[in-house]
Amino acid sequence: MNTSNNFKSYLTVALVIAVSAVTGCASTQTPSSNLRVERHSGGGVQVQSLYLAQTDKGLRISGSVGRMVGYNNSPRRHLDVEIIAADGAVLSRVAANFNPNPIRRSRHSRTHSNYTVTLPKIPPAGSVVRVAVHADSLSDCRN
Ligand SMILES: [Zn+2]
Image (cartoon, rainbow, N blue to C red):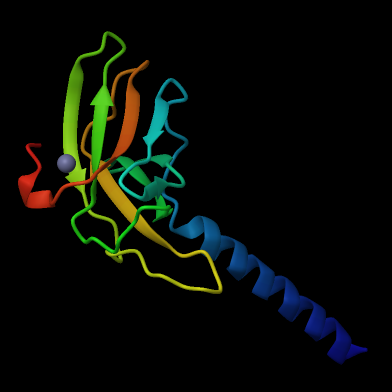
């Protein structure tokens, strides 16, 4: 009886730890819901996901990219992350690499690489966060 009770409380503690581990790294708040996101795939690279998070360092933009037809293992791809105001003005533009690059190939599972960019300023409401594949090398990027 005692053993079983102990086991139960052990399980509870383990669960609490697991939950706080998941939420623990998120000192983030839900970003302004007034931002829109756009994903532009190309050059054999698919922008699979795009997440926004407001952190104490600014706006974190992260997600994953995967292979599409036409991807030829080129390490020259990168991502251009642009913030576009409601009136169309480009507020900021940064180039980002994904990792690993090139995106791994696997016959058995879909593989992907991840990217993360943090902008120091939270864009104004109505802005668009655009993540676009740039099929050129980072050093050739005019950003
Ligand atoms: Zn670029």
